[in-house]
Image (cartoon, rainbow, N blue to C red):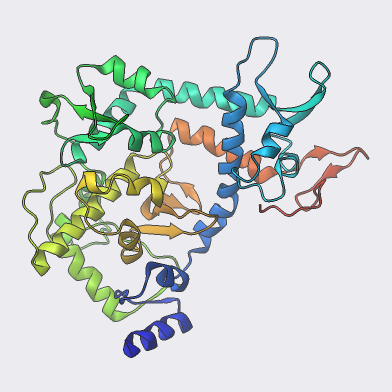
Length: 399
């Protein structure tokens, strides 16, 4: 026990030197001592506020509307939800920080202030819905892929609901996707009351899909400046570490040994799980492959750890998901900004943006740009432009 504490103290003193062994410390201890990637952390500083913006936007859009009156909610209603929405200074202060997204107006008929989306923000919400509807075949394929990764070829519907936005599904996907593809999907009663399982029909269970990591291996093998030994590519994953992170010789050796380790891919039948040391290592590598593929299916190649944990047992992963991310920092990056942990697929990002974008991501990025814009470009009552350092409430950018 004493030696473990000494090693932990050494890591805390030298956090940029990465050791492959996480010791028998808690995940919380390791999270606090690990190397923080400034690019992802800076991105999450803004993204955590985007999540709050989206929560309010969804509440506004959920209200009934007609052609003459755009959707809106009362300011009093949002203020009462401040704690639930994690708005520490209240809804009013938060809304005023984003005048390019929200507009507060007074309704004389109801004698109280209301909140609606600006024309720019409302247009982006329509564009996102159109982009999702246009990607209907891709949405069906994503659901099929998810189900094929499950050991039983089924998933609880509530787990899919947890990640509908991350997967780019329409908000009514149960009716617009599942019901309309009744020859592919079927809903069955679960083992618990009021639960449903989403299943694939038997004839769909033999679909042959290629995992994204396999596509990378083929492309990497064809490159003249291939960074990985071609003889080791068969089981390798793309690894990337930010500048400033010093890697110990022991860590490099462990990564090289792990890259060579054979395993079953995310769409292959798992078979019997052997409790030998080698079997446990292969099982862990398969878990990495499954989570890697899961993140590849998301719109933004990122997801909250809590949400992906709902799929753990259905994918046959019998280890802690967060530990998996911590133990493979060259593949995943775990951010703890905000009150929830978020994992990124490291290879998908460059300088805080997706390398290969998609239509849904492009629209969401425009909304994030409005969040980043804050009050910049706003004409104040004195006729001047409000800069990022100025705020009507005098608050900073972070909630």
